[in-house]
Image (tube, rainbow, N blue to C red; front, side):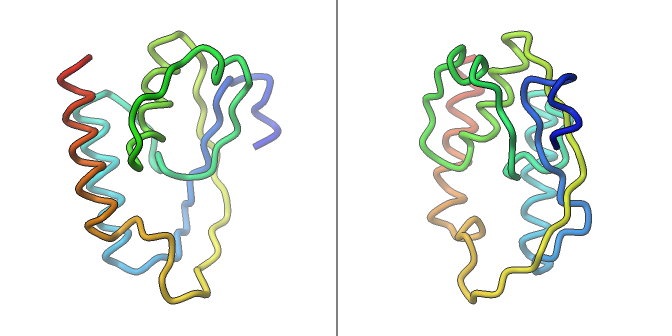
Length: 122
């Protein structure tokens, strides 16, 4: 990621060989496709690790509280004229049984609601 610091204001990691269960991979693909359709975001892995310059953080006002906040940050950064880049990163399979919870309805439903509300407000 460090090699792109001079070329971008926000750098997002793309887990190319993602080692997640098939269900999680499918959910991620659908989510990233919806973000591309609704907002024009051409990022493969919106909810991945990121490196963000302080100027970006200081310039945008995040309002959502769900997992959509990662997409909101990217959308707002692009709209503010910041340069966004993506770089491939390694992905290690989780060793715990629960994972991060991104595939649960407690995460999915608020994320969909925020995605819709953000779209209606912008």
